[in-house]
Length: 134
Image 1 (cartoon, rainbow, N blue to C red):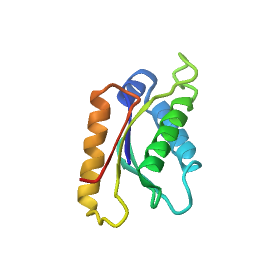
Image 2 (image 1 turned 30 degrees about the vertical axis):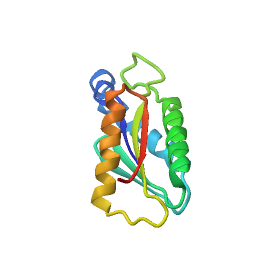
Image 3 (image 1 turned 45 degrees about the horizontal axis):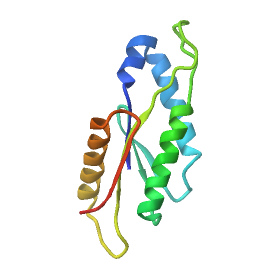
């Protein structure tokens, strides 16, 4: 899965980059506690992250994405600009699963997860779009 923090630029613009950094750290810690030791969790770009979870299937992938979406929405940090407590964001998530017995090429998997993320963003913030590899 690939997930992107919704409207993260607004956090930086409104509350400052230090608050944004604290939020990134808090989200990373929260998601890191949710995944298994054999899963991979990585920052993919500025405010984008990727999770590789082996052997959980389509239902498991969607369920994990929903748990991550819900958990990130609960994360809050203190704004260092003194104007607001409880700064947080939501995430949009694109999930792709590879059916058992099928081999997926990494670029194709990433491209489809990214396309699903794009669809989630089009539907509005705080969404999960999942599919199996074409």
